[in-house]
Image (tube, rainbow, N blue to C red; front, side, top):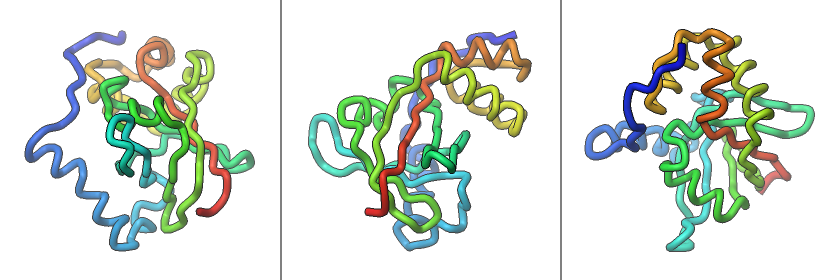
Length: 162
């Protein structure tokens, strides 16, 4: 059963440095080491207007339609999520290829479909995403459906190489 265990809190201090370490892998042109499991997201700061970046996990893909899906583990508190909500025009690096892309926050029914596919393919990882978001779950379909009403899922549509 899905159970709230705390408030999601973006990392600070040393934990933040560890979370940001994968950025250097992409900056050195070694993004291929992550395969298709992660993407390097470049987005515009909603206040500063400057280019920001984050490395986020890919939870699903629709290669036929050039779509990549990610979850905001910290929900609406995540800076990248706030920024893409204000300006959906982004750049996504998958492996070592940079694409122009547009971001869209999925509605609950769409998010449920994506999360159910992710949970089936990654039963341990869905529990980690839930914990990061301040929830504990057993990974059952019922828990995933309940979690999809809480977590924010973002669809990135790749529009061509940058």
